[in-house]
Length: 534
Ligand code: GLN
Image 1 (tube, rainbow, N blue to C red):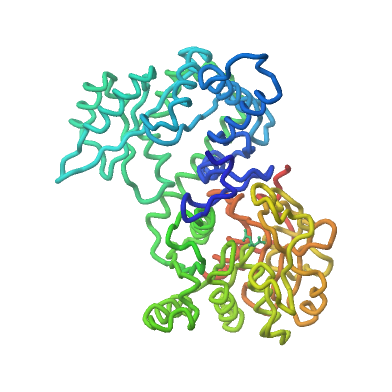
Image 2: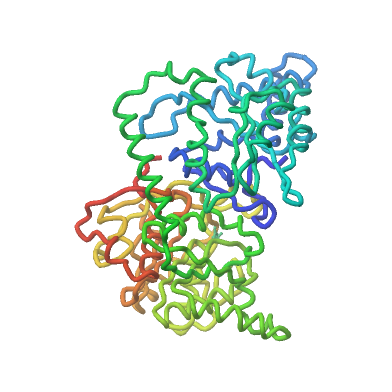
């Protein structure tokens, strides 16, 4: 029933993904952007809350002209119209209307919540025409005492059929490759051909999944079921697609042969659920692949670094510090609220003093500023007002335009420019992005560096190398005499791609791997994922 993912705790549902238009959406949208190299809008995420909100608003306006408003047809029509509208919106640099729209219906067949959506899709199949619609059913094939069990799949397909839909393809999630006998059994009892049953078994990394699907002739099946060969695709696109596919395969398969590792300590507060930091982890993975390193990610609960909290559990405290002190790089991701922030400040201090590569994202940048103010500028009580409202030295303050009464959709959100400041040519982060004067990255925050403290911090050596286009808002901090100490107010992880990793992450992992020089472009010849137009 949530209208968007913005007000949901990351520990409950995983990270809130942020789109260029500022939409706060389900993390699945991030997977689609990353895998398909597309840019989506908030309209691409339909939730029950959102579609009911639309229908109720229409009812209040009197749009239904006295009719009784019902789930069928009003809600189901609204869902279909929404999908048809969104399917027309260009999503890539060609600016052209897409040829294919992928609709992911979350949940499980039989869920009360998904019933109106299933009915809407049944009707949409009629609207689109049978040859323009393909239904893929994802099902679990558990292995019990070594035996692959097909009953859950059979039962699920029966449920889908009783709702009026019939799968064209059954994708079976299984820990191991499907045995030919399992495929045959599913085909027989679900009444499809053997080719319509494909195995999505566990593989080394999610980057291997497209290769697995290609090996099972998924492209051929998609082409025949939806007559995709009738679409005229310009030769240049085909050439580009083939080159991308080759690059993807090479990079993914090379990963299997890597021995050297890079150890990154992620010091956060939502570490119990790793999906809370999904895009951050993906960006580290993308970067490690390009640095020829296996990523060894170590999760550190920020609170465990605080002596006061762990007085009764010294082993936990020492283990956490061991993980921080032995890491090649320390990352502090985004977050909200006070819990764990003192542990984060301590980790940032360690990274600064011991010249360990550091990347601070959003809260991680704010923490680095607090640490610098306290331990270098001598403002012992410096803090963020998010954590200590009464601090005498509020180095991080509430942004004037924010709402203090409404939490939904009221942060500074979406794609915004950062301008590199004159005299920052030495900056590693600038050289990573190339020397381009301006970059665009996605934001999600309520607090910011207090402009009144910028001069003092700068004089003490903390460089604000990137600011927003008004020059009032601090976007990037960096230390000069350090292998890599960077804090960014934005979230570059939302624009990272396998074949084009996010620059702040790439620089960080490269510095932690000892090969940062390879990625610096003092002449400014490369400008990639920071250069996405709104
Ligand atoms: N809580 C901080 C703010 O609102 C940081 C937000 C974040 O890390 N996304 O500014």
